[in-house]
Amino acid sequence: VPGRIFEIAASPMPGGGAVAVLHDITRVEQVERIQRDFVANVSHELRTPLTSITGYVETLLDHEASLSTQAREFLTTILKNANRMNRLTEDLLVMARVESSEQELHPVLVQADILIRDAVQAMSGLVQDAEAVLEIGEATTVSVLADTDAIVQVLSNLIENGIKYGQTRSGSKGRVIVSAREVSEPVDSVEFRVRDFGQGIASEHLSRIFERFYRVDKARSRESGGTGLGLAIAHRIVQAHGGTIRAESTLNHGSTFIFTLPK
Ligand code: ADP
Image (cartoon, rainbow, N blue to C red; front, side):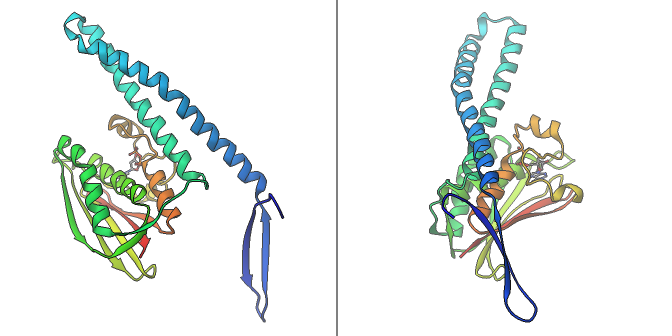
């Protein structure tokens, strides 16, 4: 049917034959597209005024000597919050992009270890600032079918979380290990793992952390600069590659995020 979108489910019937059910989801798709476009447009429109706010506040803070203690304090708070909004609008734009079926991935054959090295490189500044340790474990040189930028983004999001939530109760800095190996389940796949030794995630939250804006501890996530969108973005990107993503965790002992990509 021209212009209409259908979802098809088919199942075999006992005794031969099959039943196919076609569900017209044109309207649902239209509403979702309108919502996505709206979010993307709003985020885009917010960028310019935010850049202006950040610019002016930074300029004022550059002239520290002429500021009262209170003015400096208030400006620092304004800057912190403007930066938060900047991150949020950026993440909302990325989210709208990865959720739209129009987003084009450009998968190429790329070695798993190269993806890991690129991500580790991209995170080196954050690792230094947090005085964390980022290690590469076993890293296969087998190639996967991946959009390099998108998968480096997934790995970076997971590494960033590992560092952010990786501090132990005793206050020791985060340690994160990234690795990749060939697996046969799902068939012909490479499995990437990002492991930390931090606070961990209670089992009742594990199934929900990939939802948009779901956070175990809202206050802590905000404080560490989180937007609540990193894992939702990672989930979408991996799904669009035909892979799977999940997390294993033990409270107070750490978490491992595991995703697969086709070879
Ligand atoms: P945020 O910006 O809040 O980090 P994410 O989507 O990246 O958003 O993660 C969602 C939530 O999942 C976080 O707020 C945190 O509660 C939990 N989480 C994610 N990664 C980890 C981790 N490595 N260790 C413990 N908790 C984590």
